[in-house]
Length: 299
Image 1 (cartoon, rainbow, N blue to C red):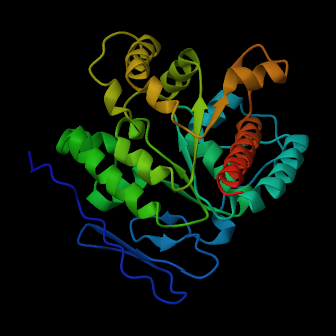
Image 2 (cartoon, helix red, strand yellow):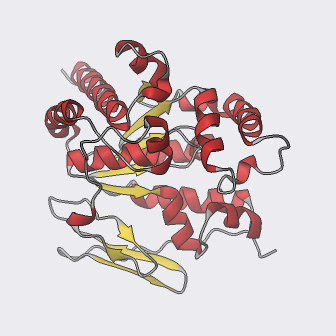
């Protein structure tokens, strides 16, 4: 096993309005616009070329895919009325954010990537998946492989370094890994923006994960039994370890609460867009409370 030391993420000095992304000797290098628009575009593929605006996720009017499968697969279909509500709420929330980044936290399978892409698209922000950035930095194709080839501690060190760099930027939506909340230093970096917890019932998470398999989930390896039972058992253990940490988030998006408001019996029946709308509502509530507290401290 190679020595478990953090891979350095090198971000060159920001100059002018330059936007460069490349990978050199296993290091993740980028500079970005330091003018008014400080958002950086999603990096795509091994050569880390900047993604064009046309490659952003599109909101489709369709009823074909099940909401649960959409959250895990990332393929989004949106009823027309939900799309309009989402757009209106984003127009209200965007100016209040004033460029602050949004960090989505939650258990594995909670839909952070899918919901994050929807929010980034409608706000005009750029989207990053912190796990993908760690993979690029280390030069390994999956988190599971990093755990196997190095260690969980090695992954966590690189995860923290990624968050440190992202915390210096603006106008980003970041989907974080499920275990990001266990290190206090990570909260220090994420609290530079707005943190949002996607709170999903464990049974729903287990169903989603079982539907696509557990191969990409290193913390689920080693358990015996069918996919659902294995996932539920391990998720229950992980939530006992992390539940209090998730409560540190600035805003909480409870899927059972959304389902109840919409008259649905099962949180799994929620569309990703409905969850994104609630996330924006809760972000707006937090920003207003935060602004009120700032005014109270500085009358």
